[in-house]
Amino acid sequence: MALFLSIFPIALLIYLMVKRNALPSYVALPWIAVVVLIIQLIFFGTDITTVSANIASAIISVQTPITVIFGAILFNRFSEISGVTNTLRKWLGTITPNPVAQIMIISWAFAFMIEGASGFGTPAAIAAPILVGLGFNPLKVAMLALVMNSVPVSFGAVGTPTWFGFGALNLGDVQILEIGSMTAVIHAFAALIIPIMGLRLIVSWEDIRRNLLFVYISIFACVVPYFFLAQVNYEFPSLVGGAIGLLISVFVATKGIGLAKVEDTLSGSVTKGEVAKALFPTGLLIIILIVTRLQELPFKAMMNDATSWFSVQLGSLGLFDVSQSLIFSLKNIFGTTTTASYKFLYVPAFIPFVVTVLIAIPVFAVSGSKVKDVFVGSLKQTKNPFFALVGALVMVNLMLVGGDDSMVKIIGRSFAAATGEYWTLFASYLGAVGAFFSGSNTVSNLTFGSVQLSTAEITGLSATLVLALQSVGGAMGNMVCINNIVAVSSVLNIDNKEGVILKKTVVPMIVYGIIAALVAFFIIPIFYVV
Image (cartoon, rainbow, N blue to C red; front, side):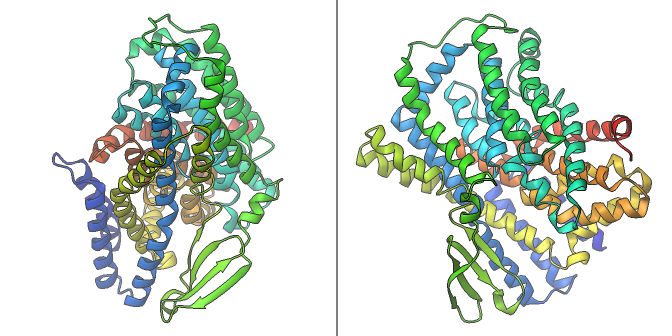
């Protein structure tokens, strides 16, 4: 019964979002949160204080994704009003009018690099609107962006899912490096197929076939440096691989290598000065992201400084604390050990999105009335995602209540017990379930890392291999993660299509898991002792 009631809310959520008259996520998710709340109170007997503390924690935690969404929408609205998007559209058309090349440059190589720098769903938020500006269908672009943003995710945000996601397991640095190395091997093989499946969501098989050489040049340009760097480092594979891949992809596209000739339907040309000005906001965005994420620079530590600046007790609600780096925390919520926080400076919202827009406004001489329209319109566009994400995070928090006896851990242990020594076949899917819940490869690794490790020890499987499959699963789960689907739909202003997107992106996710299992069985043992 515990297993049934743990799985039931997820099954019901999927049904509500993919049925014929699907409910929008901002309706379905809050209702599912209520269902989980009832199950926790009645079946699991969780006390009302713990439940209330986790709901309050979710409302605070939702500020992270919703402010990132707001920042991305703000940046994209500014780009439209200032003329940046139109200039970039014309410029990309001068590099190549070939749609397949445009897709690979923007949604694959460019997004690969942005994922390496930031994570948090930023790649889709930045890349997807550029493709829509080039004339691609917004719904198809949303699906494409989710599928493409999978291979680099395990090393996203300078490797956070790997070094932080498994940090609680007390593994040695050598073990974490080996997990990263195996993870890169699995992702590298998946990259041979998954980008093609992503392309097929938006262009025909014939278009893919005619441009296949360029497609694989772009894939290998990112994946080869990514793979080799992952053998010695777990922070920079995606960032460096994406940067190298982007440069090579653009160069090869300008030469027309591996590309079918197509008619240039984009009218107008742009000067180098116009291109440089149009690239200024995006360039500034990327520079700020990289500078604030590199471990070797002082800014990351400064923006994460948890040293208390001042605190105030908010009655029974908890202790409200503001750190010197503006981390807003609510501690000991309702007298429990539950704590929630929002890193104002570190979360990629105010920095870099809002800051970039504020700097760019005078550069592009945008009028005060238009600036007001940009900010007000962006706020209005975040209303529905806010309700959806509150529902999602309340659901996640309540399903994590209970530690080893939580609904999430019950699901994980049951899956592992059912498969035994064949767990390698399914380990990645548990990681995907974690990402589906939380919207984060890092959170998936934090949540299920201990389950995966104990399963490996019980069944005698290689711990590093199983944890690598967990990390891969958390990355491929980004394709079907409700948070990400809501986020990219919001940025592209797509209404009530979350179920449609989910039905399409679940197919490449399943294929990804099959590839992961095959590589784990047949390729990894050739190069590693498992």
